[in-house]
Image 1 (spheres, rainbow, N blue to C red):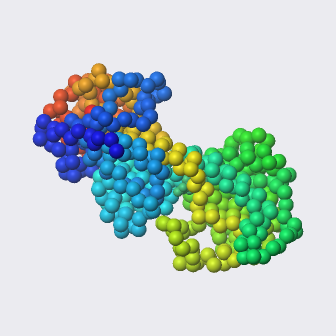
Image 2 (spheres, rainbow, N blue to C red):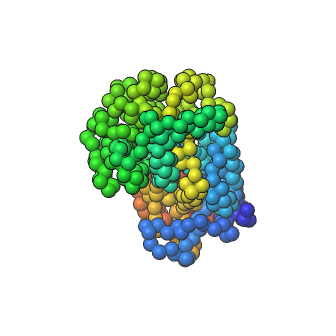
Image 3 (cartoon, protein in one colour):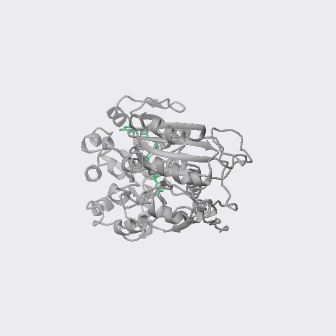
Length: 475
Ligand SMILES: NC(=O)C1=CN([C@@H]2O[C@H](COP(=O)(O)OP(=O)(O)OC[C@H]3O[C@@H](n4cnc5c(N)ncnc54)[C@H](O)[C@@H]3O)[C@@H](O)[C@H]2O)C=CC1
Ligand SMILES: O=C(O)CCC(=O)C(=O)O
């Protein structure tokens, strides 16, 4: 681990740690600490320009004061980047029960999770120091995004680094279902030889119906066509098909026309039980259903009935309404009351939410999300945030020693900018960007010729505005 940041007491007597504890939920900073040894993992130039070698490292305060809580076995690549900044990183292999999570999250400035940790309003309301959440995965349904934004907590994810891994799992499972590989393998494990061809098929020439043609669905489309499958897809948005894949106008048309149906939609109120008894009845006899999206998307008791009745030829599930927080013998009726019936079904592949669990995906996600967290903590950049407006400014440089960057997250109501600029107006505003998303707005401004002794007032004046959600002053 690199040397921790220098912790130079500020001339006005404040210590950054005191400030974090005493001044509302803010990262307003009065400390002069920088971390000269910390290296930023990726170029931090904004707007895609060439890296500026003289970019100034901005820190909210001594980086060693920043507490990062990582849950659910976040990949080492991500941990290394965060530790490389000098942050204090506490990493756990699994998620935490809600009461323990609430205790741990009280102190954290940054939390990193995957799909199991539920950051509800009830949990987040205890997170008084938290400024940012990193979802080291695609889905962000486990976080109350609105509550987070309204409390000045930015949320980042990795929008496509595991898409290919999910698509490849689907291809493997499509072939395994068509050939009943799961059952044959189980029989052999139990010492039984059962050489059959009845009900076993090639996938060439069969139709794959993809529901949700986003990052995962479109990757899968390309792979399936390469194996000689015909591809149709249904999406709420009009999208151009890859290769010769064709969009169909309704879910019913897709279900009527496909031999294999795979689901790749986000968890939303509209996608709850998207596939239930009625939709299964619209599927072809002997067709297969695969779900690697979220457990809420399929009515599993209805699926069990259809498998028992021989309506469907098989199914593959990677996700469930309730999933355990840690590995172990927990996939039982206590978790989901249908579990025993599900386990008894023929030609069903059950996997423990491993669609994105490959070395490639996890290490790429670790880098991508940790980089976004560092850019946010150190520079206030929200590019890629899923619940905040996306705002970035060109870097400050070493030639701008008396500049500070003001980040002001505020309620999106009339008159705020006038008041903020009255506060900033005593200085020269070199550049400023502001944007809003729903009820929350994000303003970033670089101002010049600010004496250290003026920073406290600047910060306090912004904090005192009624529209304030969170103020940070970085320099
Ligand atoms: N099993 C696993 O390990 C993984 C699961 N996932 C899940 O897969 C989901 C999809 O991932 P991506 O393809 O990356 O997301 P995406 O956002 O790129 O694509 C989702 C697509 O679904 C469409 N959609 C939304 N509502 C719909 C509806 N009611 N009917 C039809 N289409 C609808 C959207 O328009 C979009 O095109 C994620 O939200 C996540 O929940 C993602 C990665 C790994
Ligand atoms: O790998 C994980 O923990 C979750 C994968 C997933 O479901 C996602 O990326 O949305």
